Picture (cartoon, rainbow, N blue to C red):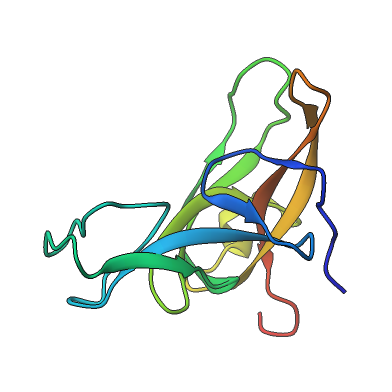
Length: 143
């Protein structure tokens, strides 16, 4: 079952909420060179073409590419936490927070299978609408 984020506001522009209330990440894909990146692009950063770039819904699965364990952050932010870069299936890399893991390098193998999940952040905009953001979790049954 998919979480329903109808009425929520995306925390960042590349997060979209579909008519069914499901959140997803929108990216751009170039049919000329095959480059896929998160977010909207007017031109391909790889080949420079403008006529072959278009929107694509990014995958919700990937592998852990790199990470850092953050021990000091802004006041009110619970540390330590894992800031990660994930290579997505089908192309593109995405940064975010890896949750539901112990922040221990021995427990964070390179190429660990990852899933993207969307959650209410607990914060609201000035209009009182709740924000939704993406997070990474270890993929179930694949680690």
